[in-house]
Length: 355
Ligand code: COI
Image (cartoon, rainbow, N blue to C red; front, side, top):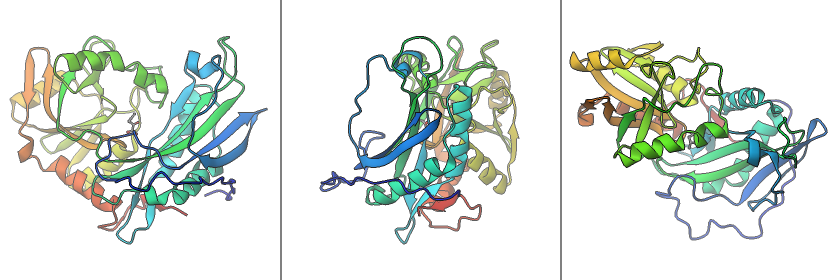
């Protein structure tokens, strides 16, 4: 890590943790005692501070509220068997954050502010890391434009923040998925690969429509033929067909390069599966299902970790799966949890201690 930068800390007078159980908390509803805040002014990052978690005062003309120059990340912190705090592959999220910043014409954040600031904050609030299986402290770095102006141009000023949220599992039950053929999430040349706030806002209408039909999430398809799969809800998606694990490739810029996705690809290879990152059409999925070769379908993400898909609805087809017979996704999920919770050795160097 780059030279440590000591960010001043204003501690809270009273922790909110007393009397709060950290077990089975819903995702993203509780926040820890402190937050990190820094401002980009006159071409540089300044005034970084860690202070009690509180509301912000913003002018109604703040540019981010109008034109959506806003990006974020999701990282998780865990405790090992000796109660030592660790974060999972934070450098990968740091790099993706800055790739998102560049795509959205925003300034990049220096490694010492992002990484060291995050470590200082997690260390301060480490008592908030839940020590239960499938639980973690979700770290949410984000940045938004702060110029007070409603002219359409990149802002000159920005705010970078990190907040922390103790959480249980995100999608707790296996999911029923609607394969979306009308609305799209991403096109080649667009911002699909960036963790831009608008990607999530733009997905909400189609997701709500799928929910009205009784499904949990949508499986996004390509914008031209509505045939090639992209992402599933807020997750990357994997199909196990025979001895192959297939996930859409990143080359078109329509897929978020998930850190969990990368980790799962490594673990699948270690399980002896052939991993293919490539275009996967729904015709191939249907044919594999008909031939009895489509073994498992699951989503991966930081918030969701591994989420099993028990049904895919595509045109007039309903593909149903008996998830009780599955071995791959549950095996990967258990292994990832065991690495994260320090129950087995981290042979990949994914766990970065909070220092
Ligand atoms: C994540 O997995 O970290 C996500 O970004 C999904 C989400 C909760 C928006």
